Length: 204
Image 1 (cartoon, rainbow, N blue to C red):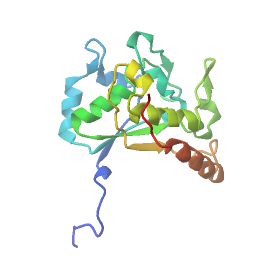
Image 2: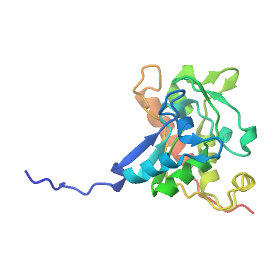
Image 3: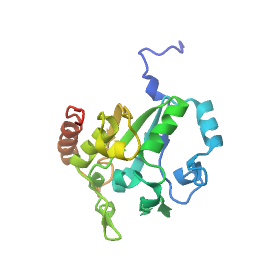
Image 4: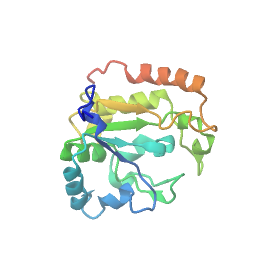
């Protein structure tokens, strides 16, 4: 049998997945050196050796992740409860830190946005905090990443755009009978896509 593929394969097929997994050893918290305020060097070295072409941020964590909590001054970032995997996340790893890891290892970042909690009500609110987010919040995240001179990103000390080219709408949408049905998922996906594809204009 000829081992050559019949069709061209996307280079992004060889990707890795990053999701905060609560108190487990595989969590993002475990890969972050809180004393140095940077990624652990052994984690960076291991990832470089694996050479992923893309790293995905999200998973079911995106069902209750509010991206603004992972930005700005570290001492002001709120802790959040990991509603599925358990434990608490410090939000010391946010957009800037995730993108920095991707750039250091030569991988494209893929961000999974909060897709109204994929319709799963158990993730929409916790501890008196709204954990679900709609199309406008997803569009704001895209602008934060890519808009030149974005005031919020600049205020966080990141003058240049992150140039995130790939986003994913939700996680495992419609797989869960407690989440969106197929028709609702399709309608809302179109809504999110329209919002997230709005032209990016430089801030004055």
